[in-house]
Image 1 (cartoon, rainbow, N blue to C red):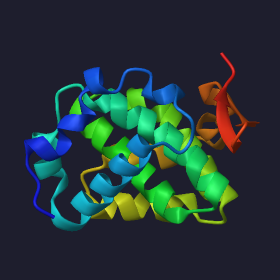
Image 2 (tube, rainbow, N blue to C red):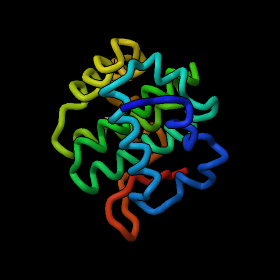
Image 3 (cartoon, one colour):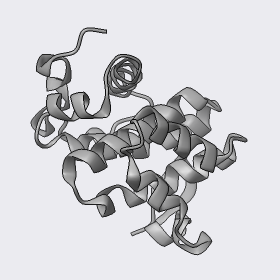
Image 4 (cartoon, helix red, strand yellow):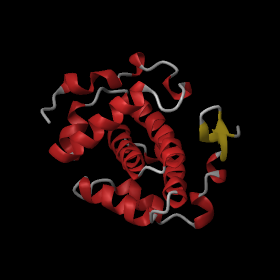
Length: 169
């Protein structure tokens, strides 16, 4: 995959107004998933960070939250992995690991719900990043209570399309 700044320009916040509220899955979800999984195969985390628009962390966090629901809805580990990558990249470009905590809790729970080991899934994403996705490993070291979706203000629910993690605040 040949990557440049133009490849990631659709992740600008101004091009994703109300994206988090879109019906699951959306064309944007598929576009982000395919870009992230393709980039993971052909670029380092540092290269991807340099190509991201400055405010892409917010879009990536929204995608990570949405990907957790899509992974459960479709029992799809590919969606889960794209979400974990999005959260790792968001953490890397924002510098504030706390911004992705809610998404990480949803991805952790989604991994459990589709029968995958969350520790292995997060560790694999860290390995893909060359060991630079430290926030993923930090999340795994949290107490069990601090990893729950309830601690992050979410619950398991649904919408007209099926399963969806829902904010309860």
